[in-house]
Amino acid sequence: MPSQTILLDFTIDPANLGSLGAQQTLAGNVQSALTEFLPGLQQIYFNEVDRGFLCICTASRGIVVTIRGFPQGLITVNIEYFKDEKEEPLLSYEVRSF
Image (cartoon, rainbow, N blue to C red; front, top):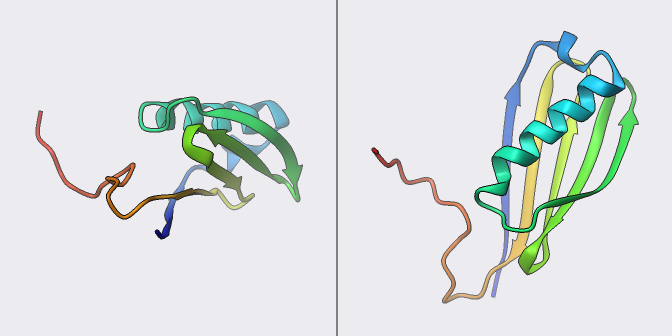
């Protein structure tokens, strides 16, 4: 019965983190993208941190998502949840063609 941690990171133009409104929009865009995979995702905390931001969200099954924006333009997303051995992971790294 392991816990699962999925770490994602990407970069954006640092100018897109220049204001509180821009930071909140960016966090909202990441949340919207994750909603397809994480049912019931909702923000429970948002705060500016040293010219960047920290956003914490929860979803069904006890999932916790941390979205962190750094002033240099680095965005990290950390998804943590508990998975029984017989359960399928929430996200896989399989490549699919549609």
